[in-house]
Amino acid sequence: MAPKAVTSPAAFPVAFAAFTLFLLFSASVNAHDYSDALRKCILFFEGQRSGRLPPDQRLKWRSHSALHDGASAGVDLRGGYYDAGDNIKFGFPMAFTTTMLAWSVIDFGRLMGAELGNAIRAVKWGTDYLLKATATDGVVYVQVGDANSDHSCWERPEDMDTLRTVYKIDRNHPGSDVAGETAAALAAASIVFRSRDPVYSRILLNRAVKVFRFADTYRGAYSDYLKSAVCPFYCDINGYQDELLWAAAWLHKASRIRQYREYIVRNEVILRAGDTINEFGWDNKHAGINVLISKEVLMGKSPNLKSFQNNADAFICSLLPGTAHLQVQYSPGGLIFKAGGSNMQHVTSLSFLLLAYSNYLSHANRVVPCVDKTASPALLKSLARRQVNYILGDNPMRMSYMVGYGPRYPQRIHHRGSSLPSVRVHPAHIGCKAGSRYFFSPDPNPNVLVGAVVGGPNTTDAFPDSRPFFQETEPTTYINAPLVGLLGYFASHP
Image (cartoon, rainbow, N blue to C red; front, side):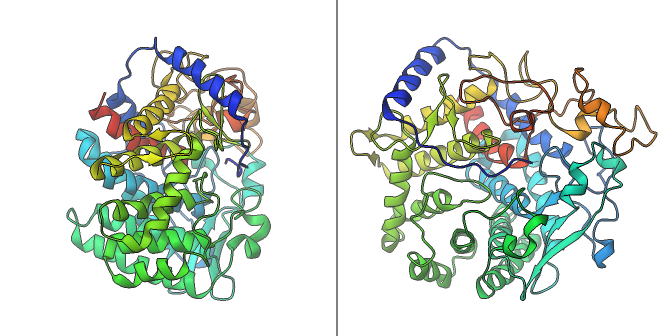
């Protein structure tokens, strides 16, 4: 899995020069088949499924796995998603992935055409598991599998013989971060199913209410208690406060109950709504909170939340090349870059917010006032599109960073199931260390994990297509989830 990345501001002249070069570079590229990319982006999630696979499973080289998850704790925790190229089910990034899949459907589902059904199924695979993980009041099961044991092996999920330890939070060992994100995912998904399956939608919303109450009443960071089980993998570095606001924002959007808006107003300063406004991901929700809440402000429904729109505007200005307050780096080829691992998680999440906010601004006939320029909705869409196009092949390497898209893409991704022969081809068990020869092999992966977007190139746009370089070659669910919404939009606005 990808470790937490740290923000690294770039100097204005360098960023402006890089962006200018990228404008010149991108002017000559060909149009992309966003519909094909969307189909593949969603298909990726089927390759990450854990548990018993359904008859309509499309990636046939995968099979059933982890069928006894939760048994050691007397609970059923089968299902859900493996977060990346390993075989652990981490609840924190899985919940964020589910939230972003739901948001993608809420904002852009009507534009997804034939792929909408597959996108909804991807959401439900996540929420079905989250309902299991929250079935006991005052308890959230937040992880299945011992990460240190898992990472010492290179084996298919179908062969797992590593520890499937179950980790939980409860009233005596709180985790407001992962519980808050779980509540947000359930609430967001309830909107997705509101008209499609009202009974399921109500189940999701009712559970979200209970999980949020638990998260807010018993406050604390889950990594303070679970420590080495979740750190350094998905350690809560940013704090749990943002997840409480994030969950309240989604609960208000899903329920329209006044108490959640009052909670946001009352806790805006206490829970530091304006902190770290230029980052968004599985650990840091601040920019997402501000963009999500700003929609109501821009629609004239919540003038008392104007400060969130101000924060969202500042976030937008912090991303724009050529502005004095740029807070992200751009590679020479024009890719958003933040120091740390799995850079594409930042590219897709931040680009999603650019696009979402652009739409909100368009409906309100507004622009973003930055200190030295004005950002129109069209400019935000353009910047988001350039990031997507970079992923799909408009980059100095002339390589698509989505597996299976375009003529050239990564062949040796850091992914156990993809790199080992499938059980259909090699039904015999491949043990923990026996898989090492596949890990170090120079051969391409035998199973194509269609739609997987890898961590991506480094700050100079260089990319090593090699499994040991996990920061560059490992895919994650939370890279793809925001991209679903982006591709849905651009498929209908080529």
